[in-house]
Figure (cartoon, one colour):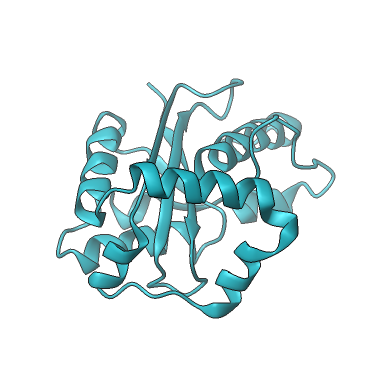
Length: 182
């Protein structure tokens, strides 16, 4: 069983209580290649606002940029077709994470993905399904090996699941290159 989970969120803000559009995660072994298990859910942004999560215009403008067309269209289509209310989406993530109890939960930045997801659970009055002791910062790992570039995995950029897969594979390359023991 993989003891590491790479998390990625697509959001409508950069603050710690931002609206979450989608959650992507993969369970993986940093000493091997590939991923063991994956999760993705799309969330209704209106429901996020109902519980007090926020949007910021800078991020909305960024999503509307013409250079983000493929990711934006994918995200908007899936939100429209499959956007769950926040409690349902967070419940699904809790269920997915259960077999990975005790795993290190990696986010790209010490104060972003993990913190936003933890705050979303707080917004619906539930505890996060992982211990704060499991929080890890993937950005720190990336800074340890600047010579290892983000791999081209063929995943859609700014798709939460695609980014989680890419980041897990990137970590595997860095761990192998540096001989890290995590």
